[in-house]
Image (cartoon, rainbow, N blue to C red; front, side, top):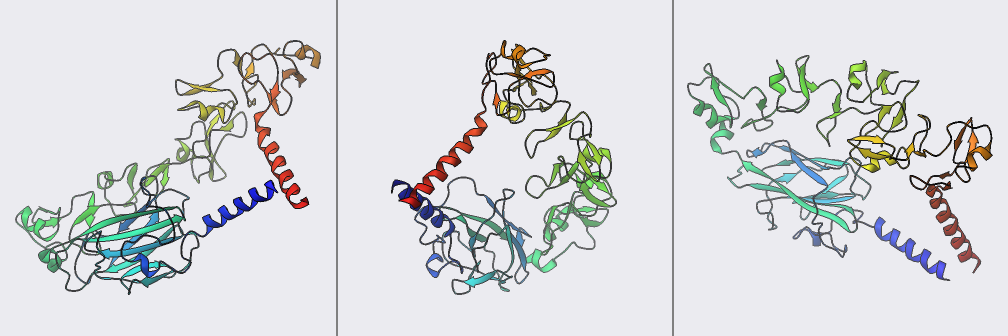
Length: 416
């Protein structure tokens, strides 16, 4: 019976995690405080895992602005959300309207936007349109996002009123004699040879055209200086692009170093991955004499299974058991060594380098065997620590034992 109770509690806990938000959108009770009802916990106080990105940081009456709500951590998704355009972050008083793209609906008497299902989402894009007679109030796009039942955040981003003069001009004047004339029409613009211009690494911001905003990947350019506001980019073919060896990454960059198995056309595309080459259109390790080492996002190519570079011991031991990080390089600790480059663990120096039978090995290291002319610990065993004089069971078999025990418990519960 004990096993049955444990299983029922586990299943009930899993059901609670799945029921993480209302399946058809936030209820009316959530409109005021924007707090998910029935979640029985508080807003997260840790750094938010999502971003609210408007297409402009200033607004003019009646000019639509696109808002992108997305999780900031790669691979993390959310189930539910509620967004409102408020003039005060803490007061339920909204301004303007939201459109309703697929998968969304208006709520709170059509003053808010929420989900229509609790399916996992990477991002939601929608449009906020200020009232035509918009005043000089700052507007806050306030959103509550639910990742799971006990994990949700409340965050906001502010959009300033551009001002009556800038909203009336909506663009750069055709001529000027002073910088102030340009600044009055478009924030950050200057007068260059009688013409208002944004700085070389900036552009006229859409859709309001009331200020100069930093250029982004894909914007036009004539030199690398035009792209200097975007890290690791160059001006290539008249566009700002990631420089060789980097790729576009919304979460980490936007330009982020390429890793093994990323696409490439020449070897230089893989230049930031030690010892790699471009083969079959992807960055790979050479087919002979090299091994892929490291974790999923920081793999490199090494002449042994020891990673080339490291920042901590774990980065090494994931690839080669017992190896450590010294001077930012993975090494076997004193008293151990790699018997050959393909070894996945650091062996005791006491192991004979050559052998003809098992007894020659067992005489020096208990339970070691002769395999391929060298002494090694048998499969599923290793040296527990440097200096060991015996082979011990590999701890990686522990999860299998745990699984067997769990299945045994499950079987017993059905037999009771």
